[in-house]
Image 1 (cartoon, rainbow, N blue to C red):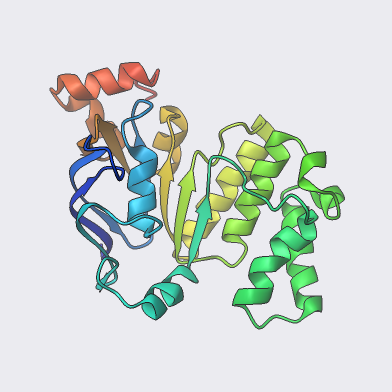
Image 2 (image 1 turned 45 degrees about the horizontal axis):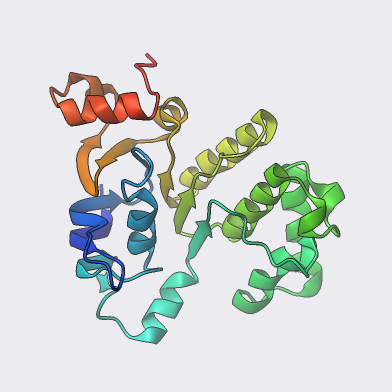
Length: 250
């Protein structure tokens, strides 16, 4: 498999706070894989996701995406790379004074050469696919938390980006929309996207992911296939599984 994203000896702490959130992270993500990062609350999962995507810079260490060092690259190079990325945050982060159509159209208007008719057709297709067509001209405040989360997901993947970063993509979703999101994630992999997911839903992650990353206290304790987790004689791994309420789902 081709290495796409590499984190080399990553350390991170907030400005003015010497406590490390990430403590020497070394991990690689491969082309056309789904990899899920799990661990107890506060272990550094979301920070790792943001560092891997270049949303925040590490305090120490290097992040490389396809031979482009994010910590040393020119602003124009980073901008071009980010056009190939999609992000889903725990909160939908929709623009409150824009309706759903315009929230979704914003990215297409600025980052593609699509006509307004083509933009409408693309948004219409996605809203139909996710069973939210009736919400096209609603405002975010008029939607449920679950609906807003799905709209945020659509916004992230509407252009089938090469690199997709998902923070709890099915968190707060009803089972119907969680299933729709899951099917889209699987389809995006078939279209050669690399997808990094933060989640604490072990059963779901084990079914959708090629590999899992388990974290505790800012460190990675395990990287590999789900079936190998329970063969590891590592108390930290067992503690992580217990903490997130996981069990052997085979």
